Image 1 (cartoon, helix red, strand yellow):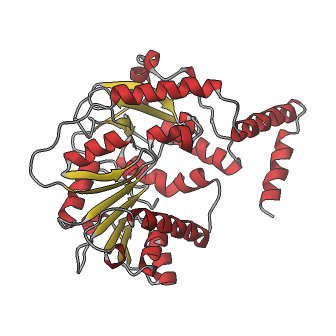
Image 2 (tube, rainbow, N blue to C red; image 1 turned 120 degrees about the vertical axis):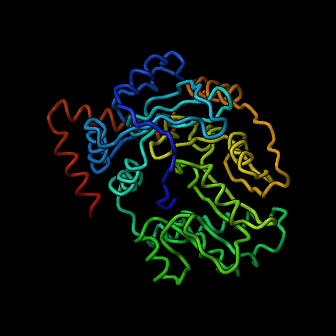
Image 3 (spheres, one colour; image 1 turned 90 degrees about the vertical axis):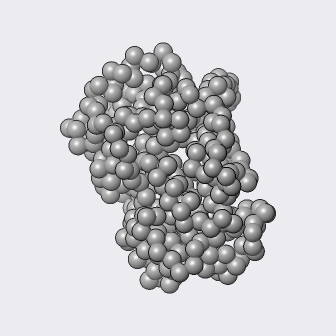
Length: 382
């Protein structure tokens, strides 16, 4: 995803992390399990860079540099939540709750916009990737994603041939997805908050990219297709975002939304919900909760899956369909998934994590852990 987190949430109060911790602790009995309680330990094996960044983030949390805000549910405006977890896969503090009224899973309380902006500038990408990824490599991976998205959309009932469409991508990064669409004949435009990404795509590939948000978009021809690929789960105020999309999109246009689906954890994360959780995500959608959000903002679902790859169009008429409460089904899925996770044999990634931990523990016992880590990091840099 490109750099696109922001919020203009009105009435969101900043609260002290200690208050948040106390409030969530009262609900620990409702969590998915003891292992989902914040304990300061990472579920993923971290390299030296990631460990340093994690410590840096923890320091900012402790010192109050990163602050939290308590917000109502963006689908039903409710405040009746059940706690699911208070940690993410890096071992960072992350209160994840589910709304009992509509079933939207969300990080709440969450960091404020100012805190998220600092996090994205200072830590996010290298914590996520574990290293500095060269932009040509990242661009190539996005180009392949563009091929996959184009193939998926080609099977959908669109108002005109896909190759003739005008395409806008929000949070486009360096523009790899758009470059594939351009190669197929589309007119493309992208926006992103990352100045270096925008410059790379514009200068290296001649793409029409600009730095900004959807509110800053200027166009000669309104886009027939708007793409959000692994972006919407980062947006702090999705209702305002989607109202901007509705304003821009023609009546016969389509909106493509792709993001990590909660009910795809069995396949995408080998049933490991902790692996799914990362503090950069403020919302954690199922197809039903995503549909609820889009319906609230005047869209209807054309096609979608729990993966999530989905296509929406503007809904005709003013009345919004009733919200479908996904809470019982989502909780049933997560609890069943957690139970079945315990029954399955260990995955290759788990065996690797366990063996790595055992080796590090043995080296620490004999006093060689720091030397081994230093040699390993030196080997990686060769």
